[in-house]
Image (cartoon, rainbow, N blue to C red; front, side):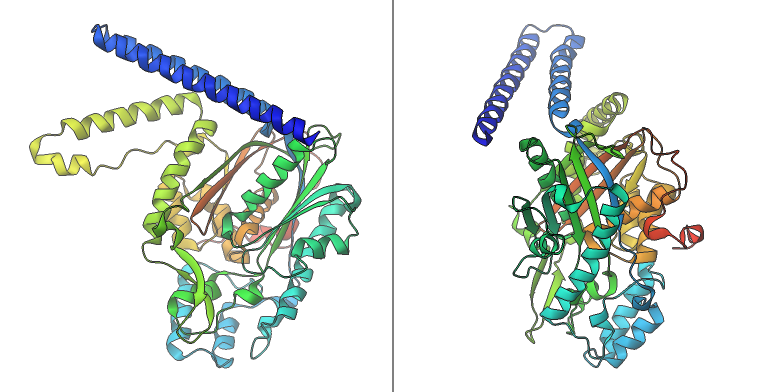
Length: 488
């Protein structure tokens, strides 16, 4: 049966490709005909309009057969125990006492943490509270269990779906890949069924959560009869990510990354389970084939043989190029038509100015940056990479967002730090705890990871969940009233 589905999907893709190429050729021939016979300028818009209409119809049919069939039943985020809390002042004192850092390294990390906008309520795993830190394999496995099990217990309890009904399990954790795998640890703990599909993603950075949802989505669509539910777990094992050397380029992860975990339960439209969100769009872009992009972030040993993660030179420029390519693809599916037309006109006018600029302003015209569409019309709420206040502000302003749109990312980093791919779910939990997500609203989750890669999810809130009594507070329980914190 799987082979029949694969053949059917292949034939459908081939047919759509042939139709797309044929339509494009007809439009090009029509444009050449209009140009050759010097017809009215307005006629140039006819082939383009036909191409846009075909593209819209094709994307609608493709969405109807894929993303519209996937729903998010619910999700859970871990709130670590209070005893693991490590205030900034306590962390800096801890760094001085453990003996592996010189004064220059401690001073550097103190400046980075102070500028990052991190608060005093973030958490470290038990292994890093010791002097010296106990960053062993056994400690990392213990941290994984302490992250996964409470988060999944909460997810199964709030959804009412038992682990025995889960047909697919996807776990993403960049820096720790034990044997048996992290997915196997979870499947063993919950005694999942013998035919559960387990996947373990590693080395993919903060964009791995979207990749995990993509894997679960494809499994639910391909094996719709056998798999009703899929769980995606996102976490970062900070124990093995800890760097104890003196290379300042590798000390940044010590400054930003903190303990956290999320778990999301997905289902297809074939089940009777009520869903909280509908998957409206999933877009993945990478520049892995570009050597500069590939080397922009990597894990390696320093001169003393100590392993750490390094951000390469020019990473900001490479991220900008990646986002530009990613947003062009994403905007085709999430921007309203009026904004698409406005953006196309702005691009045409910008190109015309560059081509017809006078001699005195030729250099300025060539270097003019093309305008960006207004992404505030594409989504109602935004979850951005949680990489510290300066990076969040730079990215948000580049997307044309205001402080309110960046609030979830800024406050999540202030309260919990960077939790890699799980941070996007803590931000969605923040928006829910504030009561901002209403029926029909869309939420855009953007993740950027090593490689480089940029991945996006767009969720649409389903009616029937906004008036169900007490507001869902999740990990923000007992503290949501303190936020937003001014000056972060």
